[in-house]
Length: 160
Ligand code: ZN
Image (cartoon, rainbow, N blue to C red):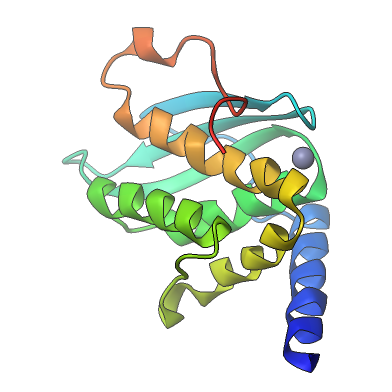
């Protein structure tokens, strides 16, 4: 079907563009939340930093550092962009929605439709962990209430 072909083209185009020219690479200043993630099946590593607003309930910025495949890096860049301005509750709902999307059960509303490009990855099951790594890592960063919970890193091995 041509629609599937178009989706695949768009998916490859967006992923390659974000991989080559990420817009949200670096570290936030200040760092209010942070966490590292690792996807052993591909070798992707990621370190997320999050800046919150003055009351600590809304995301001002997310930035990422790390090395990995184009899918992992593009997913981090798209996620960082989508998270700006959202409350922590909304952010955690978006993480859940992304996981559902990777299982073919949901997608994002039109104002966040860029994220739907990552649906293309679900056609390649071995790469799904690459796409979800940054989302699992953000969840861990947001749920860590004190510094001791951010030691080590999130591993993608047990979660799909
Ligand atoms: Zn990867």
